[in-house]
Image 1 (cartoon, helix red, strand yellow):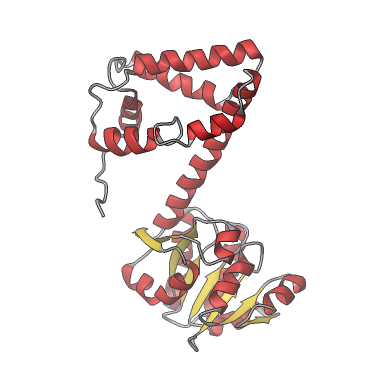
Image 2: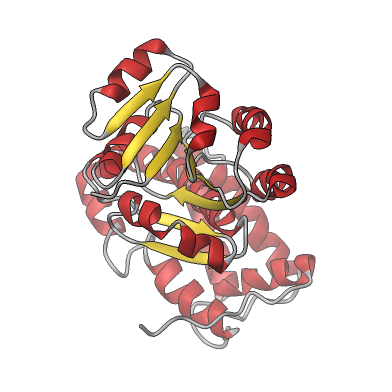
Length: 301
């Protein structure tokens, strides 16, 4: 237990377990606009609550766990004139990278700093100390907030780059998760329409060579990473299989949205001359559109 006070603004669904993790390692001063949430936060060991937002300005570290960027912006604009030079704000709320960089501009005149520490995990994982953090910011600022990051990131935390990088990674992760959710529901609806056992479909998809995992582990992490599209399953064959999925769904009256949109990408890639390349070559479209390569090196460790 350290004696360094840590301020926490926000005792919502994620804020309460954040308070609990911080309270296990620090003395915590917490604020929430709701008296009910303050009462709940005050029940956590190591946590004292306040009715006055301004009281948080007396702490060296301020953790934000708020519902949206507008609330974080409002809180920082109110507290900034009262913060001491060297104060580190740790933003755990899910906001845009541009928002975090705006927070830095708000804090710069008073010499305060900001680190983005996006929470990859859910409420249950934070509660039990198994959360993962995606961190962005200046290395010195991150080092100054290591004790807080260690307390919150029980499963570990990683620096993804400069300020905003942690939030960018979180937004990418959520975008994938939410898009995949739609694709999975479509897949299970197609399966049900064909009389398949949904447990069998789930087991198939979670296999290392299944349709959910292998596109990442092989096609992205090996082929796209190395720009290697020779051999493999031809894009034109993948397009044919995608067409079969659409046809089967149409015959059973199963609406498809995400799968239909994905088919358009294969149409474009085929028209661009990538039909005989491995179907991971759809990445070439985004390389052309964005003007940047999508190759990368995997960390062998």
